Length: 442
Image (cartoon, rainbow, N blue to C red; front, side):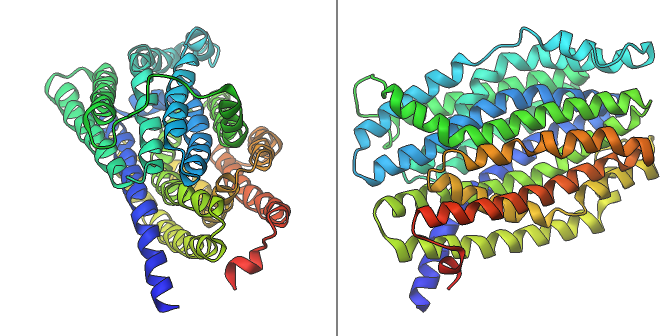
């Protein structure tokens, strides 16, 4: 029993820890733009970034679709001993991800947010950033998918080197373009694109020259496998698209209530929460291929231990992050704002109400990770529709009765709803697999 405990913890550290570290590096990537824009462009830049996030999330959604679904399918196939087919499916995922790249309706989407002349300069900043950033979307998708596939071919540690080197490039280029050249928002966008190109170059080298290079002919996997990936990853992708819509709706609400200063708080919240969602997702996404592989190999006691210890690791990490968010809210906000500009009481209230029920995020992340690892095809889709039921009505309703900064309480309500629904749905999934939560924890 003692040896099983340490060996399982070792596997979680190997798979989940490396991906966790990689997504911490990706969090730093996001934080870098926020830090330099907030401190050297000003709160106008942070407000513009709030408008940028929903647009970029559209592309992250498609990356998530093939990252999550692809990880489950490819891991199952590798677990069954068919590496040749796995490589073909990997190639198919790159092709499918690139097909979705487009930006035809982005500028009109931002223009209709507000017709107030005092707010048009914020929208103009966001559009100038996005016009440049879109050039890097294919390279962004390449880095996302490659990280997923590195885990599938049993090289999770390589994810850290890929994402870490890309993040380091972004930090250096942000400092050069914003602090030295004084290019402002456009400098941050150029830095992002060049860093993504650098990450894609590493990917090309990895699959062409490293020991893990592809060995099969240049052919693609069948459409049936792609469809299987789409069914598995659809819940995560739809959830991301839903959040894109929600963020857009929130931005429109804040502008409608003449609270553009809270757009800066929304940007700060988005940046800070990357240190919640990305590391937590990294931990559970990292061990997801391991669970899928063990499940395919019918090693029940082994994958149950991974699920169990993954839960405790996730919750310990969740509560540690929660303590930091609630105790150091003002200090975290101040990190992204120039000393000459105020961090208002309304901004702090907005942030704390968004963070107040974060522990439920850890529970939901663990549950949804198990659903994906067991190749669930519809439950994550059901959960992904919850924002339409919870967030949209609350964002519309709360400002009618409470000060506008209390609108962020809607996100905490959403955290509880997602965890509760996921908890109910996991029971039926586990029964289908002849499992139960009790079996996992006994």
